[in-house]
Image (cartoon, rainbow, N blue to C red; front, side, top):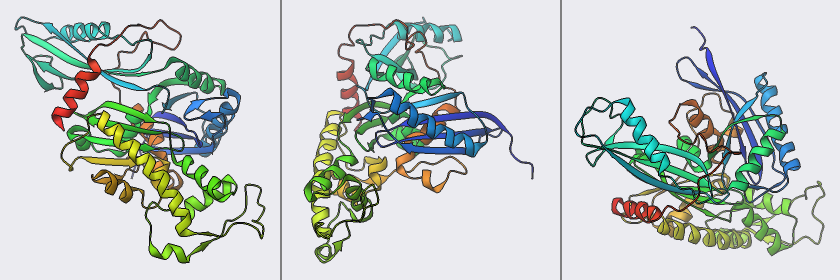
Length: 421
């Protein structure tokens, strides 16, 4: 059998608060995505998803990429980069033009998109994505390609994702300091959605919760696109900090206890199990005076923090208009999703079906990079593999940016979501 020929190389970097991961993939002539190399390093110089020390962060990026290059046996020059924090916001900018019943040409579509782009006011933020959604003919939506059809009015909603300028520039500088060109910076929820949501979920409506180390992104998809997002400045590392503080142990010991014994569900048997605190980050064993911690005590601390985060997730979903029938699903992903019992805990607290979202669609991905913690990384490959219309040209990192407001747009999209949910 003839081996598939790789026609396109795609490289991605996810700079998180706990780890920096890199992935090199090849797209074959049949469209299949093959993993060629992966790399991972502890994240340094990153605080709550934002770059705090470029030199430290650059070293983490460089080491992760070098590991992926060694495994793949190739050197890379350009990368797609995920961004999970930094004042992210999602808006819709509707636009419509008159045609007088004529047959729609590509020039008409181009004129519509140019009008839509001119209608965008970023409020001083930087656009990461400016993408047309489905078109409408005489007010009736759901048209993927209007060319060749007749209509009096042609319309489209322009989907805009914005971020604060400084965090975007800092990510760009960090990656370029590692001698890599930035192909594009992609907002993490969009990338993650391609990795662990089905096309039907994105179309009918779903909430995606990315439970990361230091931040949690809550986003809503409907009609096949991201329509709103909220960022919570809390994550799984806050559980670790609570454990370390509650029992007076080192952070490395607290992380080990959380990963091996922690759970968001409790059991009467937990009172009978005394846990081994284990060595610290230097390999030194716990002293004879180390606290005796039962599994019940550990999980009481875990559940207290999980409850607080889930409450904030619930408030974010309400703000985004994700309310109504309980059949609407929540997909939980990110490194925090690996905590035992977290999906069941969230399902009980929010009264909605919750499933764990794991990345899919790549062949040959190592087991170590196939869990929820790598959903954004895999999603970046999916996003990059297919050409998408994006109107953000001219809003480059060193270019001019439109300023102003988008009055009532956020209110309109939230109202539209509520009507659909």
